[in-house]
Length: 590
Image 1 (cartoon, rainbow, N blue to C red):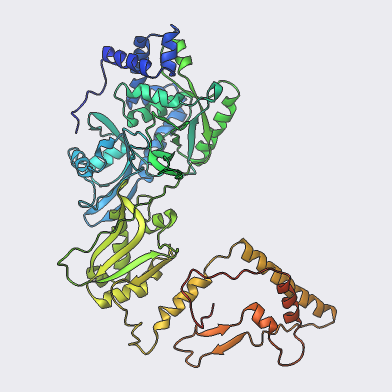
Image 2: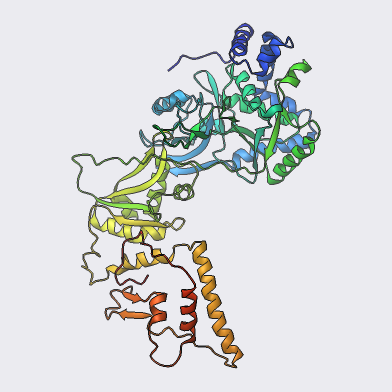
């Protein structure tokens, strides 16, 4: 790890870094202004140092002193209430914990997370969990072959103590590698948050906000410092902003693989000071209330036709203020882009372990992989570390039966190596007894009511399948498959077909009504061809004719108008016979 750095550079050292940047980035605002003689690197360095003053919390009080006293007092109170009411937390075996996003963490800690844990412990901040099961996930995967990111936000679950509470409130200063880190919300509420991005400059060029961020980073400002600087500049516009945080990453076009190979987009960590493939990072703004958000968006719209809302280098020289001013656009959509995870690593059995009865918990999807929405529901949080998943599953088992939790030997889940979060793949619960495993198979789907799951035996045959309970195996096997098939959502074509069939039924009913019949009998004689006598043992074992087979079958007596109309409707269609992807169910209900 690199040695500790000074918080800020001297003016001479910063001037040299500005000169180097101007020489390398010839298309930058700094380079163009210096070549045109409008500015000098020393003047830019001085403006950077002046702007960096606003990374200090004390500067916020200076700004609020210029607000209306009543409005300023209300905003101070909203800051305290936000930290108190919107702190995420949970109860672990070791005690209460707090979950938060931490800005300004160096990407050097990627795959060296235990060193990060040790550094935080020096400040009394203890990350929950044990090695390989830490309450720690990176908000975007670090992929240096695709994008550069010197810092990546990380979601941490910290043991709740005085140090953690002070860090959450912004009262405890924590530095990693000499740079300040800052606690922020894990996932700002969409009702109170909105996105900010830089407007395109003349000629469609992007990069004003990224360049401004980079200039501030030359003075050893971390993403945490810069987020506070930008937040305070918005306060100067009288906008009530609690937080302004950069998005952790973006979808990046990956290079094609092999000759003629197709390229695809991958989600990767991207620094806020980078312009990549014509785009730069978006920022998320958090306001105290829904009304405050609406007022802020209204202010953006009203100012758009005049001077607009800007971020810039702050200086007494109006030329610098004007040259580096970046006009911002507000987007009411405060949600974050969902991230795809590709890694699905599951730890292999270790030799020498005692025999366990393993139960798999998976999604009802064809792959068994949980979607992001299901994943967050399983973890009861957007913080989806394996540690968090383990705690939620343990609480679920305890709710079913306290002895069941004691019967759990181990929980295994796939880990995304880039983010250290659960990747949504199947969960393996190793139980010490067969009885515990069977109870889990029976009761877990009902307990996990937020998510529809499939729970099945992995390395043993349940007693029900062996028919040791008098042939009642259909309760867990056959009936479950029937329910799964019935729960499948119809597509657009299926819905159109149902609508047309309903039209045929309506036509039959209307003709009967026109003939003066108050009641209409819709006969389906012969639709069910087999009904087994052992109904109590296997209620799903009946066979149905297809529409085509039924309409061609002979009527036992009289005329069946419904059958005739359906036969004509069927002949007006072109049908393609498709094989089902699901296992065949001979003599099944569907």
